[in-house]
Amino acid sequence: MDTAESTASDLQKSGSNVKSTGETGTWDDLGASRSLPLKKDLSFYGILSAGYSISNSWLVVAANLSISLFYGPANTIWGLIATTIIYACVGLTLCELVSAYPTTGGQYHWTSILAPASVNRASSYFCGFLSWFSWLMMCASSMGAVANSINALAINANPDYFMKPWTMFLIYEAINVLALLFNLFLHRGLGKFYEFGFILSLVSFVVITVTCLVMQHDKQPSSYVWLSTSEGSGWSLGTQFMIALAGPVIAFMPLDGAAHLVAEVNRPAVVVPRTILASLIISFLSSLVFALAVLYSISDVTSVLTTPSGFVLFELWIQATGLTAPAIAFTVAIIVMLPIGSVACQQVASMMALSLGLDQALVFPGTWATVNKKLNTPVNALLLNFSLMFLVGILFLVSTLGMSLTPLIPSLSSIIRG
Image 1 (spheres, helix red, strand yellow):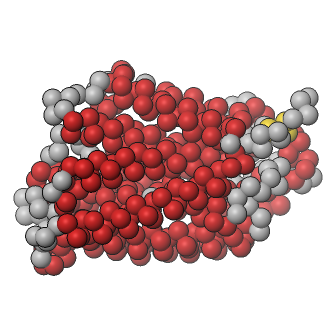
Image 2 (cartoon, one colour):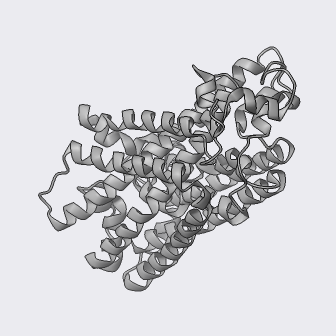
Image 3 (spheres, one colour):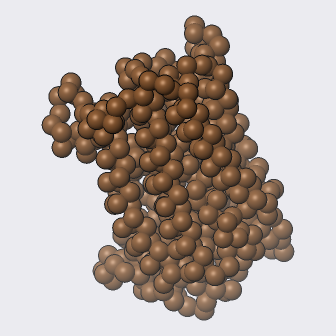
């Protein structure tokens, strides 16, 4: 056996001399998953930055603004507030569970512990696969968003430009490779990398918000922002509101990201709950302020919803500032920020694959449950996720539908995650 690697059997021996994971569904059965041989490379600020970089909530809310804005500004703002209230309850529940059971598997391990013994094993693995696939989808969405951002810049430079499917594919796969390399060879520096992304996101948020409010002299009235709804959608006000929730929900979906990185921090039962609450508060405040700034600054909703690039933020920033230069600069900042979230997403997904391998929920479980001691990372789990993401990217080549699928992937993820 290679001394640079720890296999599933090694991990199980180092964790606990009990029955295999999930056999009786108790906390003691999670011996291997509870004691992964990873060095604690993330500090409190590192794991907070990782969790926040995955969502970049203010950016995600704005990027998916077309979903809720179609039903009116009021549904956008009140939907964001309602979503925050819902996810505050979810976040508090996550904090309680993490403090009691800090485990990499997160939801599916908690399901195994708390569900009735007659169904705990099946429901646990079902929950685990749904969670793993949703993280893969979020990773794919963030990588596809980079291509959409670059496409917006290209169309601005040349209105007749049409990005070829193979170009979208290459951009997507380049980010996929970048995320893999960072997780493989720069794992010990990921904490600082995430902290850079966190600071960049907050600085960008302040600069963009202030710029939009200062440069837009003809702002919308408060009645438009807080009370205006769509009259031509054909749906009742209640139905409009429910549909519009799909936009802000996407921004809060990765709230559990830090819970899957408990093996990367010291005192996870204390640090991770604080991280979840801090991330929730920052996400809500930044998202609400940014959404209000954008809605007060918007001048033509139709142009935003029908922008040729499909990247609504670029059109929003042109309307708010009256210039293309700020919109270009802001879009470049997004292109820098998005890959940081992709790296964090791939790290979380690899921990999920590692945990499922340890619990023998995957084919060839010993392969995916291997941790490379030298690199301090689950190499095989990362390669598995990279391969799955590569296959998703082929959608850009085999079908024009694939070019429009990536913006919808977060919505599908929210449906899967419930």
